[in-house]
Every structure is written in structure tokens, then in C-alpha cells.
Length: 158
Image 1 (tube, rainbow, N blue to C red):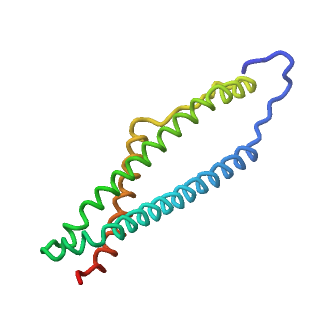
Image 2: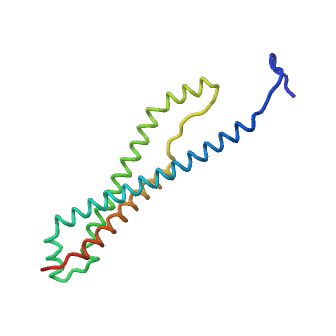
Image 3: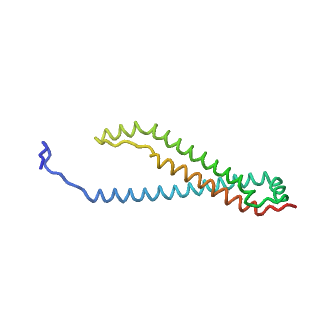
């Protein structure tokens, strides 16, 4: 046992630690729920953008179908657009995370120093950044596939 001058007793408050873990669990679930809702929002925005693109190219799609293009062939350029939209959104998200890290690193380091802590913010790892880009590209592709499949199927040459 190490004696520290001016310290008579040390008390560990395990109830406080349990409360803190419960709060962190709730915050984790809120973050997952928010992520899911934002992902759904991305999916809907990209699907609507592709839908508008399909409506703008309706006559072009009708001509393609007149010469024998399948729905899959007609859908492909819209899928590529969805992938590019997703990639652009993912890159923008990564840029915003990097900018937020740059803005918050010094104040968080100062606050941690005031508490005598060595805590510091860490950015996304390469794997996490790749997962963000992969998820955004996947959402872009899925949103464009849903919109393109639904709306191209409904277009028939007159």
C-alpha cells in the first residue's frame, strides 16, 4: 500500500461507474439509431435524384427500348450515377470529420489537461474511413437501383 500525504481514505464509487456505463450504452444506441436514420435519408435523396434524372431522360429511354434495350441495360448508367453520388457524399463526410477533428482537438486536449487526463481525440482509422466510403457507395448504388428499377419498368415506348 502506498501512502500519499494528506490522503486519509480512498473511496471507489462503483454505482457512479455503473451509471456512467449505462449512459454510454444509451449514447451508443442513439448514435446507431441516428446513423440508420441518416443512411435512410441518403438512400431517399439519391433515389429521388435518380428518379428526376430518369424523368428528364424519358424520351431517351423510350428510344432505347424501341431498339431493344433491356431494363438492365437502361438501368446501368443510373446505377453508375448513384455510385458516384454515394462516393461524393462519403468523401464529403470524411472531409467534415477531419475538419471537426482539427477544430475540436485543441479544446478537448485543454479540457482533458484541466482534469489531469491524457485523453486526446483520434481520427478515423484507415479501416473506418474505408467502411464509411464503402457504406456511402453501397447506399448510393442501392438508392439508384431502387429508383431505376421502379421507374424504368414503368416506361414503355408509345
